Image (cartoon, rainbow, N blue to C red; front, side, top):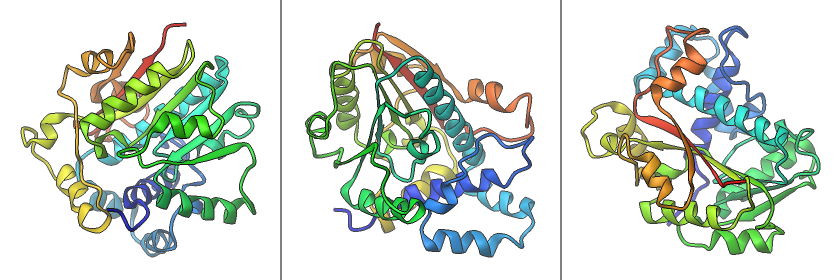
Length: 293
C-alpha cells in the first residue's frame, strides 16, 4: 500500500531540471517547469549542488546507472516531439497516463487549446501535483481534467469516461516512466483498453525496460537503484519486455502499427550529431503504437 506521493516522479523531475542547466547547444530537452513542480526537498538538493562542478554532479548521477540520465533526456525529448506532432496531426484528446510531475499539459497549453486533456495518476500523487500546479499558476488550469486512478486496481476506461473522455475520438496517450512499475497483467490490460477504447488514428507512446535487466542477464546499478526506492516509496520495477519481442507484445494487445526505438536508435536521433560523447543506457526502449485511421 502506498502512503507517499511518487518518489520516482520527484527523481525524474530533478533530472529533467538538470538537463535545462546544460548549454543550449548541448541541451536535449527543455522542461523549464520541472524545478517549479518539484518538492521543496528536491529544490533544496538542487540549490545545494549548484556550487559543485557540473562534471562532479554528472559523475555522481552516472554512478546510479551509466547512460540512464541520457536516456531520460532523450525519452523526454521524444515524447515532446511526438506530442507536438500529434497535435499538428489533429488529435482531439490527450491522455497522460501515470502523469506524475509531467508538465506537457502546461508547457504545450497554447497548442492544446481546444483539445481535451486528461491527467491520470494515483490519487496521492495527483493531490500533491494539483497543489503544486495551483501554487505555480495561482490556480488549476480549467482545461485539464484530473483523473485519480490506481492503474493496478481501478478501471482506467470507466474513470476516463466519468471524466468526460470520448472513446470515439482520435486520442494521444502517453505513458512515460510508468510501464516498468506495473505488473505485466496491468500493462497488457492498459494497452488492450487503450486500443479498444479510442478512435481511429489514436496512438500510444510508452517506454519499457528490457526483461534481461530485471532478471539479471544484464548487470548494472540502474535497476538495483530503482528497486532501492521501494523501501521508501513502494515502487519496485515489476515488468519488462524481452529484447526483440516488443512488436509482438504490443500486437497481442490489438495494435497493428508499431514502431520501436531501441537505445541505439535513440542515440542516433538525439545524441550522435549534438553530444556524441554522452552515454545512452542499453536497458530501455520506446514504443509508438497506432490504431489504423
